Length: 358
Ligand SMILES: Cc1cc2nc3c(=O)[nH]c(=O)nc-3n(C[C@H](O)[C@H](O)[C@H](O)COP(=O)(O)OP(=O)(O)OC[C@H]3O[C@@H](n4cnc5c(N)ncnc54)[C@H](O)[C@@H]3O)c2cc1C
Image (cartoon, rainbow, N blue to C red; front, top):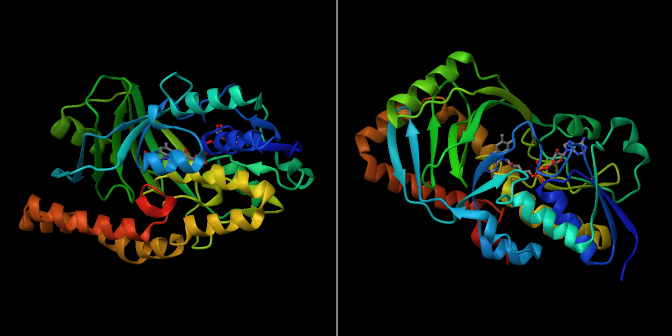
């Protein structure tokens, strides 16, 4: 059994999956987390996220049964302005990020503690220490721009308005497309809480944009939210070769490694498998690199498709709405589903492409 120590910066999803897998291989593992406790980045948590996921294959791959933390999405409405497409939902889940008992973070933290992982809280990665970290240190700092800057990782800044609170809705989600943002607005619910996000890449979301979203919510969904605040972070979708398992002799993990869906911004499933890959990299870099390449093999093509095809289309929501109205919801949904199926084939992230874990 190995007994060397491994240092991990970032005690979120991928950092804890890596820690658990390493301690089970006999390593002494210390996780250094910037926040005062587990539960992820407290600027946006508690939050609820929605993600495509192959729950069984992912649990098997990472060696942790994560199913208690994931709740099937019952329905998803995609809105082009006010025009609603009611999408059939399959293999999509809500999951809570926080330190509460129902959250994914709680499940992973308990697993890590039982297995013997040590945690140091309020211990951030600092720029000045990068060059003196032991080779093989794992960096899993999520969407925090400072860590990208320290390591010279190209990124897009994500600008968002977010609102969250307690509310017992059904297991429902929506997505909203409008010209005031280049990404989307969404809401997801689970465990009696909700999280509402309106976001763009590379450009701030104006107050007028937020007002449009709020008017839509009230007019169409009958929901009012008052507690909005701004958030910004980093996502590794700046270039097609963003995905890297190693930088400066350190092991990249989770969203920072680029194991991330570049089309919709889903990061949960990629973070889970990237944690296992980073743990493998400590003892067998060649094997880990093979796994990493497998999970990220379509990243560049999907990003190119998004930039060259989707963004020009996406900028004309009025046109998309008109086409959907002419086709009628049923045919529009069939076409959207076919596009989604093709997208799933092209994505190597498990869950988005259900067979890719095997
Ligand atoms: C607002 C928001 C909404 C999202 N919604 C969805 C969604 O609906 N579906 C989906 O699939 N994905 C979503 N994502 C993406 C997804 O949450 C992330 O891709 C995923 O959580 C990343 O996992 P990770 O392990 O890489 O990082 P995280 O789980 O974020 O963990 C990173 C950890 O590192 C810590 N940290 C940061 N900087 C430092 C430092 N300098 N030193 C030490 N520790 C540090 C943080 O506090 C945090 O605990 C969303 C992201 C955001 C920000």
